[in-house]
Length: 178
Ligand code: ZN
Image (cartoon, rainbow, N blue to C red; front, top):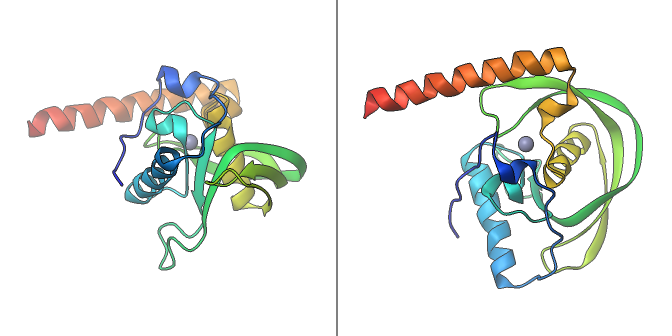
């Protein structure tokens, strides 16, 4: 297992439509485990393969990440598809690929998802509330969509400005420490 580097916005891989997973071999299982490790190290609860530079329809989620029971709800979703959704929820979202900013996004409150596990076996999962939000956010990454594309144009302008400011500040800090 190894930590992977998180790709930050803007990057081509974050804007691309990811390819379906067709091979469920050892290398694929290793990628999924690497993604969990990378997600935990960066204090996230969901991560999509394009965020580690792999343009594949793979998402990992652990709603217990960052808690005492971290690792107890690990979920690998390959080729996920939302087959039903219901209701609305507005959630303040953040993204490991857009560090330093967050914004309110409207999502479905309940989703039913069909996916394949790390062995390629199909399963169905029903999610509500924050769990449903995380799944929808991560699945967006597989279609080249980041959360700032889900807010109003005005809000997006503000968030992009914030993001660029924070990115240049952290660059200055890095240069100072060199
Ligand atoms: Zn994200």
